[in-house]
Image (cartoon, rainbow, N blue to C red; front, side, top):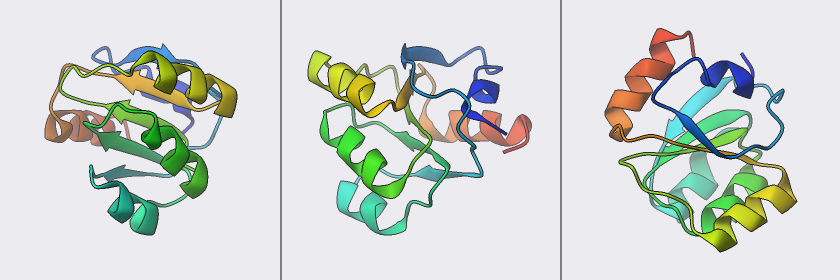
Length: 109
């Protein structure tokens, strides 16, 4: 699966389009950035409610393929610009983290 395949989920909206052809091998859900830095796997789709610029740094550090911001939260301008610079896709959804995780499983992640 690649990032582009995540867009099959109609509840996901592209906030920042990075490399849509990056491989997505697994998912990770977490909001405490230090824990995400320690445990998120490369090529993961990371589900979080965080939307500030530090999520981009963590995603770049861990090799995350896409960030999914849940609960209807939106990234601020600094986050958008930094994600563009790092070529990291940010998706948003009104769904809660559990609901979007279920949908990822439904499409085969």
